[in-house]
Image (cartoon, rainbow, N blue to C red; front, side, top):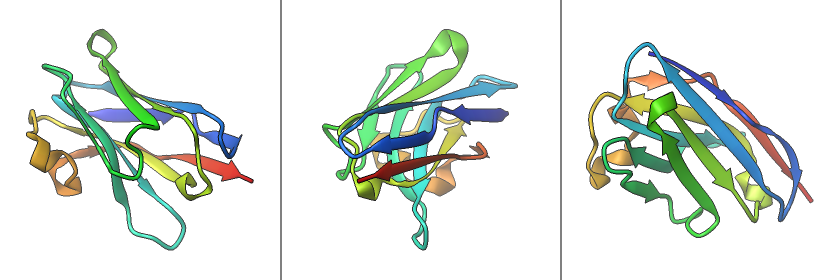
Length: 124
């Protein structure tokens, strides 16, 4: 499976940005976004299950970010609103062949496939 992420860029605080990730090669069952800020460890952002659209979010993005999917395109999206300086990071798309339950969706080791990352920079 190959994951191609896009949509990163420079945005002012309070603004919006939408990330996209397309999976090719085979159908995946759970897709997610993780991010890694400079000097910090990679952290979970959001995940969605292909079969029923069940979602999970990190507390830091709840109410501001929305993850969605397009099964026909084997793609996942991350709509990011009300962006804050602390959202600045490289965002990585990840995919699992398993339909992960909620307690596993935030665990990076559950995802076999990773994209190359797209940089999101939020400025003041």
